[in-house]
Length: 487
Ligand SMILES: *Cc1c(COP(=O)(O)O)cnc(C)c1O
Image 1 (cartoon, rainbow, N blue to C red):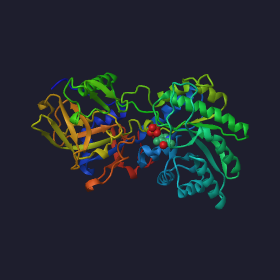
Image 2 (cartoon, rainbow, N blue to C red):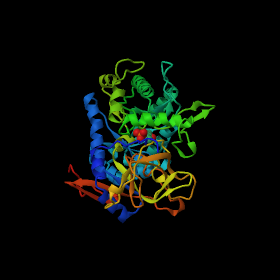
Image 3 (spheres, protein in one colour):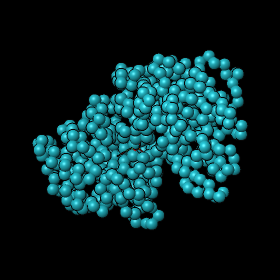
Image 4 (cartoon, rainbow, N blue to C red):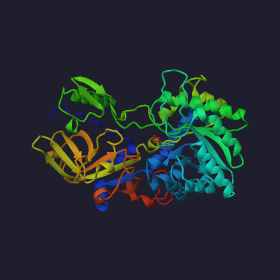
């Protein structure tokens, strides 16, 4: 085999110490089956603090709202309720879940497009409504009037910000009100003043582009001034989520992998993917075409550091750093991190069912899980699973490195956990576990389903108690009972 191309995941101490306990992980999968999802509630509390440190550094006030949709876990949400963070919910089910996990209504914000039931429950309980459109605002006002509810606090979600330069292309969004239509939106706000109180402006852009986000924040600052000219007094700007995660331990591995992938697409080396899949790249008569459609798995500037860079960057049209603009206007800054707030908060475990060599020279590792149980491929994130050896297995007899394709438990040709050849330091064996680490954000439970009546993963919460790791079912985790390391 040619030199193995590893994409080792970035592991912080908590995850690393958990992976150091193969006996514990095997015990859990023996008892609860494969696949199995593990969440680490104490990590989310630490992640909140890291975002708060950025606020402190810029002397800004405001709130961290966890975008619930990144993970369905109860344990993570209950642990979060015990921190200073608030929560962003995007469905009536998430709203009910957040209330039941200990979030009082004043710590909840409803985002996304909403049904009439969703708006009623939001208004009835008194959560903040992040309004998507003029129509939604009017619908909310009608509900408040009809049911004689107290005034609802709202943020107005904007989109399609106009950039002053030519360098930043702002992509169109399905969500929010285009900035060009703000006057009509503010008219509606004034008309319904008795029912809704404008407390802020918002945006959420599903992009990693810092310039695009700086343009949006700059745009919100300008609309804040329009509001005040009308006698409206919004106090906060909510810049949404999308801070990203750094998935890989070593940037060199990423650079090497992507350049070898390019070589493979050009036929200059053996394929690195099943049937030569190019992740968006292709060769036309020896010329590289297309664009790499992958998440940039190595992102040193992600999460809190990304927020820091955004705040430090210049306001594109207003000038001076964005943090200074916020501070001088005494505006609160709200953020809605999803993926970044559950960084290092979870693992998906799968048992190895079979290791098979084909006559074509490929090695297949079949797992007791399928592609929807850990949708890394769907999100374009490439990172290696960690091999968790069966306890008592004699590692001395281990083979050298091998490259293998990871296939799932559906009888579908397409059921590859990843279409990429994955390199292991030794050949996996039946009964080993593969740990897909850092999968709490969208991968472990967003798409999981019951195709072929296969079970979806159970979820457990784990926490350190002195030198020991303890666990309970996700639904049985409560912060006062499951006393973690810092309780
Ligand atoms: C999905 C979503 C988020 C979270 O995005 P991440 O990329 O996970 O940080 C935040 N706000 C809104 C409105 C969303 O739809």
